[in-house]
Image 1 (tube, helix red, strand yellow):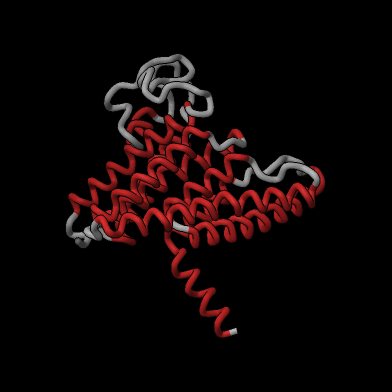
Image 2: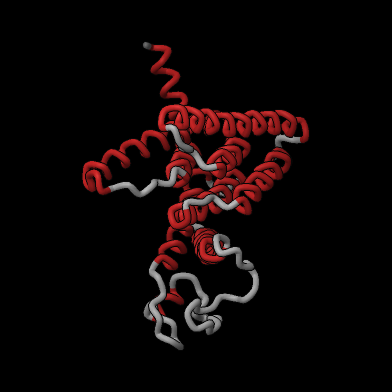
Length: 271
């Protein structure tokens, strides 16, 4: 369906923004080990609960002028940005894959990757609650998607095998990188959550996506690390979390993985 089917696009936008609103809750509460359900959305400063209109994604923040209506404490602009960005990601999934289960699967994966990147930037941790739930969701999709897209039960076993290989490659690849880092640097170079993140990506997208993700992550991490050193000089000693780079790599693999693999294969064959 094209853009003339505006009710469908509007629905995707609303769902994406609403998921983004929930992801804000996840990013704030999960690292602090708070319940995602209780209490309902409220001002973290004074505890005043948000009314129905104030809880509307993006528009609620605008209506409040970016401040709590009770104590007038500033509300971070991150909230509407996360909501708008998630909405945009959901729309992009439909643009790329159309109205399909593949688009729904891609949107779900992004719903896990985005908060993991934000949490890792803030806390240098990739919470097991998110990495494990991503693994469970990927497994359920491996079981369910062949039935939903019409491939039939015969496609379930190959789908599970592909996911199992991807998960194994994801874990072993990060273990190898961590071991090399320990050997070269003499200290831990990879957190335990990084391997679980790549295991989830591998189970979700397959082993080729893992290789693309790690390649892009290492490329971006090296480039940005060198840039920071050049800008800050020796004063820059703050550790850089690798999770956000892995997330960027996974997003690249999600949207461009097959094309990148084919391009590299053709290049290698020609060479």
